Length: 358
Image (cartoon, rainbow, N blue to C red):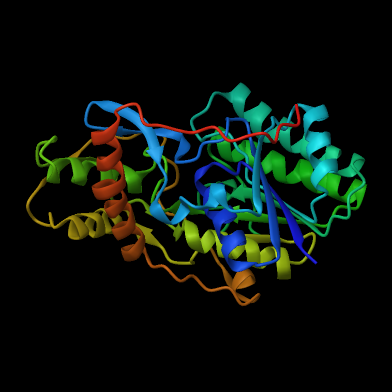
């Protein structure tokens, strides 16, 4: 018997890798992905910078076949549109829902409320009304809910007090508490996953890893002087490869305890400086470029990493270290992004039909 997975935010950075992992690791899986954007066959919905232009972010090679997999279908559905969402759920009747759809960290407050809080409420209430044979719902949150160390010691475990220091993380904490109340009210078996600093090929370049990878690639291709622009390199974070995130979420589907929250991280504290060094080493630029520091404000806590014993107790272990993640990000820019920039500055995508629940 097949297991039917319903993945929100399926075309996003994490969503693409989660979908690919489900399809490749579970022969019995059927996956319906939803999102607000039209289906994109060869790009993410976000764009990335290259030299003085922006182009749609091309998919890494390992994700290219997901859209054509016979067990995968995509539908453009806004979670706040109850009628299309209800039709999608009743037509597919999923056993598992993985809720990844989210606003971005620097989105306007109104978008954080609508996309994070209101959409999660709509999803949970629609799941209850659709009368499904649900086995598990995974609500994806952020390690940012813990805020800065002080009230709770480092590393943060799942029982630590939460004091978010930015609006995005605050909206995610509201999402957690709202969805918990609705899960209890409607008897929905739910697990919460707090994702820390996810890295990997294809990530939006508003994050530090791909920003470094882009700059060193531009230097290697002669479209940028040998200067890397950086912020605070002493800040530490818990970087986790997106492929390890995908496996962790799959592990929570099978073994996570309903009602529990799990940190999805490596448990390793790494400085931004160490990530830069790995990127420079991969690109062969170590010691041959100038590092130009810029002042940063509101960049979050100076130290931030997780206690991961609860997740590891389920048998999960990270497989990709930060050196591998850095190497893959540089390779993505060296090959996929430069190919896309050369072939079409505007990028390309192909719509696929006809799965439409509107």
